Image (cartoon, helix red, strand yellow):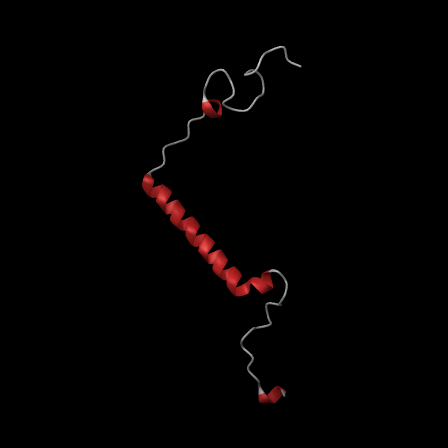
Length: 80
């Protein structure tokens, strides 16, 4: 046990007596355009993943094999 009071030693960042957040780390400035572009790219990625999950969700969770096409039941008279 340490004889020092609170705010000393290995405690969470910002809990120290210096009053600096994140141990003195200052995040870099990011342009507004880059922030908006990051949100747009992230949203596009999520929309694409959710769309693919809607289309192929049963394959992803193992209810259907990828080569079993749903909705494409074409009969070939040669194989009847």
